[in-house]
Image (cartoon, rainbow, N blue to C red):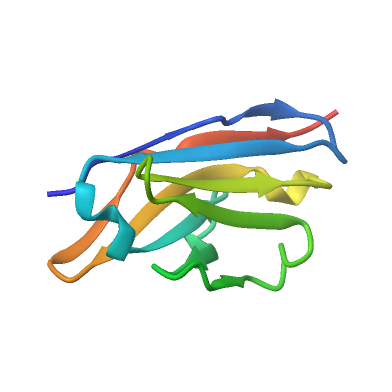
Length: 115
């Protein structure tokens, strides 16, 4: 079992920045593929970014160039740095771990981009 706890969400003005954090409970964190997903009201959950165990990254086109995913394996942490936020980035953001024994989700953190 892997527990994931997100933090760092909040209210930010358009053009602003936020950094989301996700803490993982297991020491084998370093071998997980970690993802961020988001779900806006009335919409399906969508993939945002991923980072592999060797820190290779991929991004959805909608966030490419504005968001950066990173990880600190020594601290069992993954981050999502978000810049140039837009109202359409408003959503609940979820941390997701893909492991050899299963996949796990955090509880989500709300990001609201509004003036």
